[in-house]
Image 1: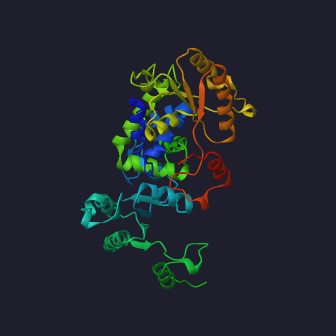
Image 2: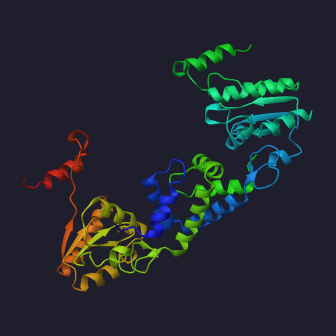
Image 3: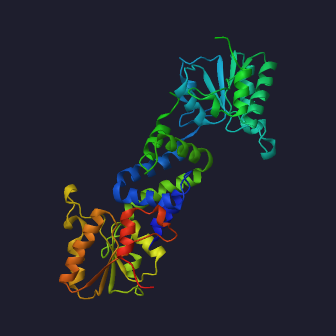
Amino acid sequence: MANQGLLKELIQSLCCLPGVGPKSAQRMAFHLLLRNREGARQLGRLLEKAVAEIGYCRDCRTLTEAEICEVCANPLRENDTLCIVESAADVWVVDQATTFKGKYFVLHGRLSPLDGIGPDQLGFDLLEQRMASGTLKEIILATNSTVEGQATAHFIGEVAAKHGIQATRIAHGVPMGGELEFIDSGTLSAAFNGRREL
Amino acid sequence: MANQGLLKELIQSLCCLPGVGPKSAQRMAFHLLLRNREGARQLGRLLEKAVAEIGYCRDCRTLTEAEICEVCANPLRENDTLCIVESAADVWVVDQATTFKGKYFVLHGRLSPLDGIGPDQLGFDLLEQRMASGTLKEIILATNSTVEGQATAHFIGEVAAKHGIQATRIAHGVPMGGELEFIDSGTLSAAFNGRREL
């Protein structure tokens, strides 16, 4: 075999990236070493720095290198609306796509009793504290439309009701630009049930 | 925007990997930070180490962290056959797929006058020294089957002839398992011209 130790190690390590198999990892390693050593050096430095410094926001549990993330620390964002999402990536997606100006709360998962994921693993104690504090008027449930995501949304909605907080669920229906012919029946049914006056 | 500085920097830096755009980079960053911090730390360390330590083999110009690569340093490999390839990745591919037991020479490119790549950029001085040393009996030209790869092979073949060394070109034809119906005409024509007795 012509592969030297360090190069082999690097290729194996690149396989830890999602969606990267041995072939892509090999291509990446050669590309970096032959054409972009500066990029590789910087990526290496940033990976180590990110792992060492990025933790979770004290208030919303999203990823941040500060104690409190940019959104939670921003005085221009409304304190009375809280958007609940499953993952830190969803915070970005929602923030980039919508005009939502409230704050977020990241569950880092969804209720899934079979996998041993209950309210404790999802930071519900922190969420209930927030609900009990009296600042919240509305909770927007933006968990995924999977079975577990729906169940999680309903569970949180019931807790919110106990605290007298309005809980809303993001709309489900036909995607913008979508054609009815290609929409699955569950989505189409949700779209009809959720119809609104023009 | 909800994206913090360091996380954003990491995502931008991941885009330096070939085939990785902003969306995949974001997915990779979240995956590493939420699910595989140990892998990320190791990958970071290996990237920095590889960039610092991996250079080119003195004899064959492939990537190695040693002065002479494993293949060139291996006394069991034959000294009289030299396989010429375009990239260091090709050394691996050939070594994994074939029973070739000679040594390699990596051009790190192909002749391409329009891009300013001439014999000097491809290590021809080193290659000619090797040819002049009198140890070589056969040179196997395994450059790619592109126009530039073919031209490079012919050029090296002529130099080899001057030194009285046999130069061979790897065969071109229908890939194993390939069906004639789906083969392009250039390949099929090469397969007919290169036909051999059964």
